[in-house]
Image 1 (tube, one colour):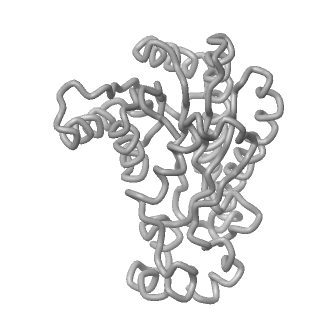
Image 2 (tube, helix red, strand yellow):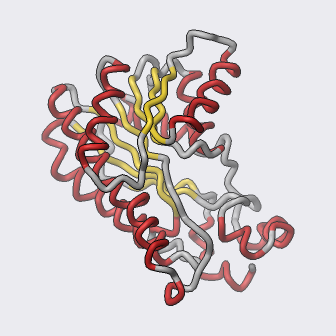
Length: 267
């Protein structure tokens, strides 16, 4: 399951989850470019370099506004990242925006558009621009989208209709694009992650209540660990060990989605 020396482009909002994934990849020798808000990601890079005790860690930052509606902006950012890396082996899309829990009938138009721009439109533009790079490089590669159980038919909870619909679209995009891009040796997969205690839904019911009732609501009796529970699956999906895996959504949710229809009664 070798991932050493892979050249990886990873999108991040600077959140703990994506920053931890980046750290795990860097520890395994991957060369990284972090894509997103440049100022915030500079501090993430500094933390990674500090954790590795190496001033020469192969982690760089390229700025990109994920609300941009111009495809060319994404192409320019990906071009810049590939020039920094000297090519590209894998792309991991961790950037997401859920917003506050809201009744869909009360969701403001601008908030809806923001959710769509960040969670679906950017995913489409990045899939296309990264796919072109991997195709033209003639070596293929791996594309991984980090999504959530709210985008899956067995992972529903109230208050996130727009967000969940976007992630459902991304999971379908994974399947259809894998079908089309396989001929270029490009693999496309997704991870459907479970909720961690600081996601909007647990926060909306109250942190103390969420922590207390998780033993009734999740088979493993805990929320997702944002620092450690996702990295191994991402490492697998970008590695040569997953060379025959494509068009698949892997659930890393501790079984949360198995009881999700009952979650609301618990919470």
